Image (cartoon, rainbow, N blue to C red; front, top):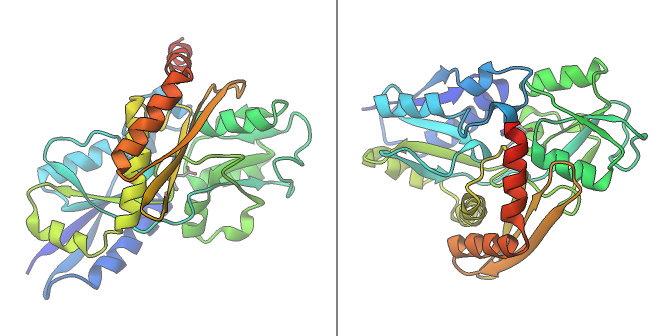
Length: 309
Ligand SMILES: NCc1[nH]cc(CCC(=O)O)c1CC(=O)O
């Protein structure tokens, strides 16, 4: 008999994601085990109306949750993979990676216009430098403005007329059941997604063998492999989701194929590449090396300097 406490952020999306994982876990739990949910407020949830990139710091959405795991207040935690920092605190591990929903971004537009159809100087809401850079690379005339808050808040701001369109992760929209609000799913040639986008990461204590065993049953090895390549790529730049870096991997026969890019937030410079390798981590590192040779390191230094001003 064991009561397993599952930690989650309190936003509607986080709760839906956690419930989804709990439903899966239920089918694999030993007899007499129970699942309980515990909501945790993170710093990222408390910061409103500030551009995340300005607040900086990696893991705004995970720190408090990690502390709860280390303290034993919770036994496992469900995170959006893309919110997970590259380095895990001592004593914690990623016990499972779940199957991936859509990795793409999408445009939700107030008057049903696609990215190419938006009128000149239309206002697009996003606080992600990665999305900003790619929107501006395609449509330099648009005005990109920061938008904070959870999905409900952002959608309300769009409908109130603060923006003509917003860019969101399609996976989040799907989980909320909001597919009919989407104007356009953006293809990888327009908007390469964030590393890990659409996948969920389940974190637990490294020494909790019982939980690790149960988590194995819901782990998706294919997604684990592609996400490992994407994260190795991001890690090589010492980057978090607040930098304009994108990466997306697929499996082709026995190879991991990875596309990645580093951009200036103004969209005026985009350095991109593609590579494949059997080993996921090597694949990510090789592509990062390739982009470094094309000037990505210098570009990111500029972006970091500008962010500090
Ligand atoms: N940045 C916040 C965040 N973290 C995870 C998702 C949902 C999608 C996912 O699982 O990647 C979102 C919302 C968004 O970016 O629109």
